[in-house]
Amino acid sequence: MDIGAGYCEFLNTIQAGKKIAVDVNPDTKKHAAPGVLVILSTAERIPKRYDGTIDKIFMSNVLEHLSTKEHVLEVLTRAYKLLKSNGKIIILQPNINLVKEHYWDFFDHYVPLNGKSMQEVLDLCGFKLEIYIERFLPYTTKTTAFVQHPLFIQLYLLLPSALRPYAGQSLFIGRK
Image (cartoon, rainbow, N blue to C red; front, top):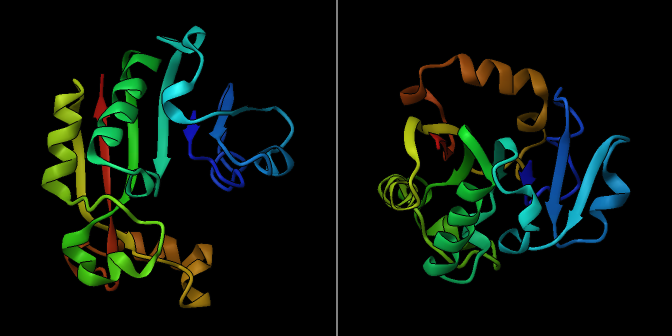
């Protein structure tokens, strides 16, 4: 399940037995590949029939767009309920400690999150953090076209995380 799936860039490229895109944008349906189930909903309103049925939840650049810290807690609590026992949550998230004031370059960023606050909220929701990579990916790919190229990303991830230039996104993987 991809919560905040947008145009399904992630779901359309991965292999999985079942793919579920969750987003409030009706255009998500237009971009979803055949076989991707689209739920037009906010994360906290995903139907209860999905509780305990999801193996993995992916969220990329979602939580900073929520209106409050309480809303972040609500969404992650809902994600916890959706997962099967031993299921995983994978979160790619801008880290305000890395990008500083540039975090606010996007008008729709509301909640400042860093590594410690993300670890705390995941713990509050019941997740056991398995992986945290502070300097995972560049903050944005909008400024430079070469950063969007798949080869660049593959080479970038081969670098030790401490040496990754432009890193502003952190990776969190937690288990239920």
